[in-house]
Length: 120
Image (cartoon, rainbow, N blue to C red; front, side, top):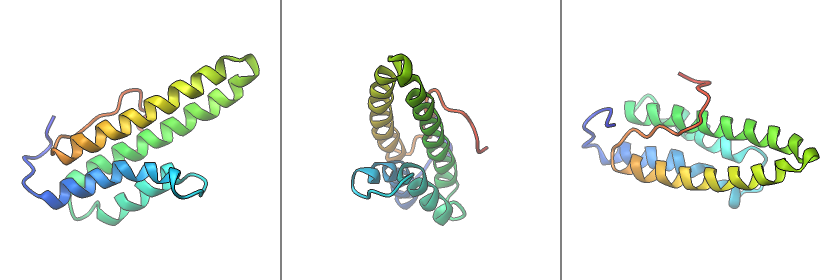
């Protein structure tokens, strides 16, 4: 689904960076980087491009949802299933983040599956 026919390469690039910024957690050992990095980029660029605003909300909602799922899975480690869930969540998070970045770069408004819409 394309929100606007995006001819603005800058907007598509920033939307891609918003999604990919969650992967900074592999480089920066700062707690909550997966949520903070997309949040900061989105806040910086949301007024300049409606596409970045839309994809920024989507990225932050996804990262917050994943954080919640990780917390629940961590508690479920007590009954062993949490370990399997954490592995599944990690793979899902990484794959969906890459897919979202590619779609955003192509000008498509990506909607993550299994997302709780905290921001609208």
